Length: 130
Image (cartoon, rainbow, N blue to C red; front, side, top):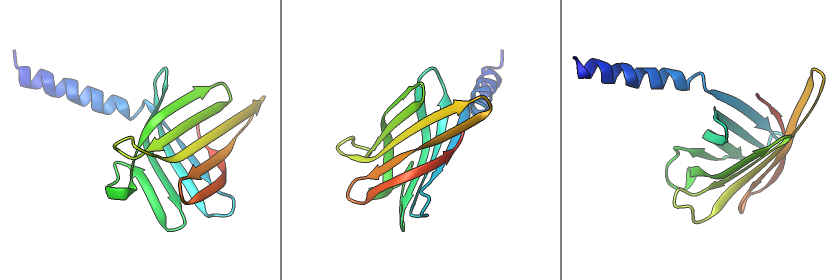
């Protein structure tokens, strides 16, 4: 048996499967001062697998470097709401809080919320996403 081929097939199946198991949420401050772009995994729990946050000329991202690096410290989802706290990679400080709320009726659906960035500011958000 060619174990290398089996391992490669397994790796490629997991990598290609991940592309179908995510959704994107894009949020912007109506005044154009801040934005949040989230990549959410399709799991039974809220899994934030990617995030970019910007305010003015500052940016933070999962996978970023130095002071611009953040991780999803905790995330919670319930019907009609989503709460995400982003921390520094050492989980010593909450860097940003995202609070999103949704409502739908028939075919109409809206998603909006707030973004608070420590030592930077607080912003209203209007979102589009899954």
